[in-house]
Length: 332
Image 1 (cartoon, rainbow, N blue to C red):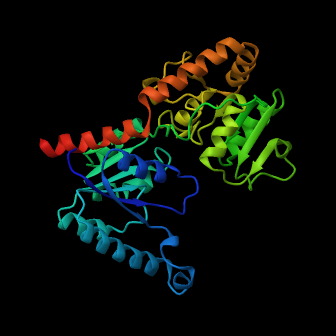
Image 2 (cartoon, rainbow, N blue to C red):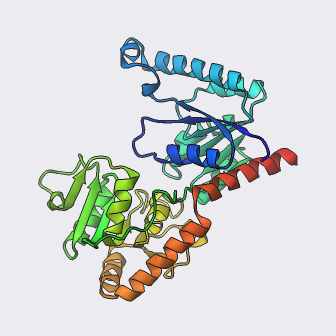
């Protein structure tokens, strides 16, 4: 894509979406002039916000958004998630001839929510290759699979002591509680994340070393202090496709990752050479035991995953792929 001006809209209020920063910095590193707009509640003072209903607040924010986009006159309007951008705003941008693109990262489990606005964008990108069939069926032809990746300044190897055998970083869910409870019965476990919904009587409380949200840097340090990083997709038992950011972030830390199996993973990493997959708790427990007892094999896989992540799975790779998709379409 030879054009140079990008208007980037981010949901700054989502503490679990650090890719806001990675996308912005990557565009700039690639030589684009970037105007960034935070569509979250933080874009207006709390004093102003409290006098507005949610509907009127977002209408006001969207009006300012359209004004800023029009004044900037970008070559591409790009948003992460995009659920706070109103239909009328996107239609106005389309009427003004400004190409729009959205990177939706909550497939497949929130595809119903995604489909409410996906058709309003010129280009639509999803973290689930398995969801493309649904998008195409709904008439969203200019959709493409685009997973996240690593930001090498953050996701990297550190020379730290291995303090934990198995670690998990992420939000609470009943499924994760169930699996981690079984893991804790056999292995040294450490957990970090916002687990407010965990029953105070649960034995897992003993293994939570950091309660609440964490920074990407804190997560990377945590991973580097572990022998194995455990990944549990929240949609583990409901969908076989769609991959979360942790797939790449854990591999980028240079620590062995055990992840529940998703179809797309084999397209990004060599199974059992760069990442290890499991299909149920029984298989997980067996593989945890095996790799904790085989250090050299564990470290070889972790090193291979680290090198592969740096070579093929950075945000530069992802943004370049996205821009090439758009450029190819515009030239056709």
